[in-house]
Every structure is written in C-alpha cells, then in structure tokens.
Image (tube, one colour):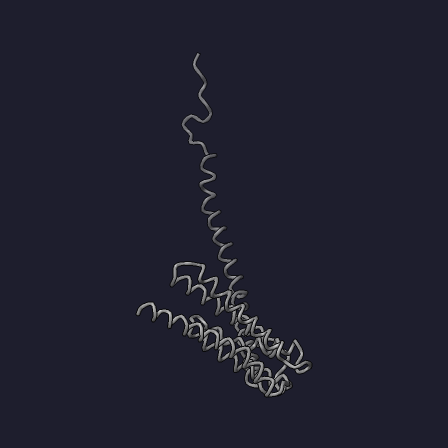
Length: 222
C-alpha cells in the first residue's frame, strides 16, 4: 500500500519566510525611532547648552562685579555677587590643588607625594582662615562676612598647579582677601595684621623650608 503524498510535497513551506520578510520592516521601524529620538533630543540639548552657557557667563559676571568692588562697602555688590564669588573661589581652589596632586603623581610616579601636596594645601588654607579669625578683634567682622571674603580670595589657586604657581597664587589670594576684608568693614590696620600673619606667615615658612633644603643639598654635594 503506497503512502499518501504529504500536503507539502513539492511546495516550499511559507512559515519560514515570514520572519525574513518582517526583518526589513523591523529595521526600518527601529531606525525611524532612533532618528525621531535624536530629532526630539536635539532641541533639548541645544536649550540645555544655552542655559548652561548663560549660567556660566552670569556666574563670572557676578564674580567680576564682586572683585571689582571688593574693597568698597558691601553695598556696592549684591548678595548674589558675594555668594557666587565665594563658591567660585572654593571650586577654583579645589580644582587647583587636585591638578597639583595629579601633576605631582605624574612626575614622581607615586600617589603618596600627590596626597601630601593636596592635603598640605588644604591644611594651609584652613590654617590661614583660623589665624585670621583668631587675630581679628572681637566684633570687627561677622563670621559670614569673613568666610565670604576668604573663600572668594581663593580664586587665584585655579592656576596653582606647581609649587611656584602656588606661591604666586598665595600672593594673589592675599591681595583679594585683603580687599574683601576692607569691603566687609574691617579697619586697614586689622586687615594688615591678620592678612600679614596668615599669608605672610605661610610664605615665610615655605620659603624658609625651601632654603633649608637647598642648603642641605649644597652641603651634601660639597
């Protein structure tokens, strides 16, 4: 008894070709979704960049206004100018010391000296603030005004990548802090004493340490 022919004999099955026909359609749909997403995200990205740019420009405008009028009474600059200058000064200081740490690690090949460099600058900044606060006559300035004047004065440290640049930044920071304290209402004499002991004391110690190391090196070589 002969077997009956199968219903699919001589005919290619159609079920296997259906997914293949759906592939181009699926790819086109996916591509269209990607293009639509990019097109819709484009304006949002542009608006975000514009907003960030306006914020950045406005921020530096406020910083400039503060430092331009820093030695004048605080009524010459707005509260937003002062707060922005303090925030930017803090970020500039942190950026500078981090870059200094990275350069130290790169040149020495070790992270230990980098940590010492970064930590030393942070400790020196804290010591300067404490010295100013301790030497400032009682009632001469509020802690808020002192903090703003000091933090805004840290701006030059954005360039403090090397030892020499940090020494220059120390001098620039002293000048900006002096102007800020004068504008905050501190007398010129008190500003001279506090800034001189805090910034001048650090400069003297650092230069003295460098001279001692240089003398020791000369004696060793001799």
